[in-house]
Length: 470
Image (cartoon, rainbow, N blue to C red):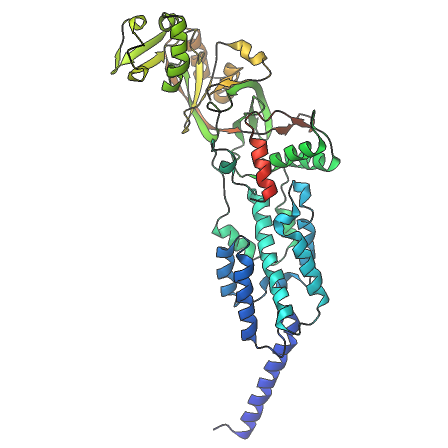
């Protein structure tokens, strides 16, 4: 049994607890007519209904369960103005080439203004609106963080020939965002800040026109290229080789500056389109042997043989069957023999399609950088003319930048000048990252924006995805 004094103290403490609970009603949306159990049920209903139409349901469901279905973000950010700062950023995403409605910005503002007017919450219907705002806040913070740090669209959806290693948000990233305790500094910290990105933003705001394009078309080009810059697919090393397929150019980047620039030829649109990829150049082959792919042998090689039955001999192409070299390839009757039963190799020499050197890097597409005997190709404006590999305007200059002065570079020069060329592999002292990428807008030495043609038609596909918000 309780003593009289103890019972009195117990009842007093109970009264204090209830008083404190109801004093928190404006914060948690609890009215005296509704028990906390009712608010939890409302929260669960809204969680299921609202998040079924949004992303991150699988991330937010356990988050709110862990937090006993409370309005976590509103409790942290509503009173100190951080929520208003978030809304301001959401409504300004046109500066990033995005539509604010990706984040449900209009609904966000309406709910925020309505909740702000309700200084006290008298019923569960009003609390339901607060829960809606809470869930929109959680969604917007996650969506905005993901886009600023990783991009909106997955690259491989836009380009089936995309093979670059690209970082994606993981569970640790989601946890970090959901545990935010302040908004302003965080949102400022995740803004893309590269010089090229800033130049695109300036061009977007200034309504400049790309040559031959309308304002709407120009903004679309800038928007898709800003999205490409948000993808986390760039080499982390200070020195790397970058090929911009759309601009037919190669740069060696060292400490964020181009130390070598040259023209290149890339794959034809369609079947021979060059891939986007990331790898590391580990070796060169001087006086290379060209193992002609079956796809090329069946088309171009056979077409040339039909025009000239001595084409194989005249172009130093050896033919093999079952691993054995055919002594007289001109005598093969291709009307009765299947080309797929043979292997074709163009031997080293002046006529070799790969020129005198090729640069090797691992990739699933079987492409590489190489020299070419057809130097006139670099005078063309449209240089999408190869079968996927990258032809180099200045292969020896690239070798010098990668190898540096010394015995190995001297060995390369000597082997290339040899009157009796033999294929020889020479490994780099240290592998160099390479990225084959695709930008239809970039900057010049003065920081101005330069535009080029969308040779593979990827801009329109990416633009449609940005408009759709996925």
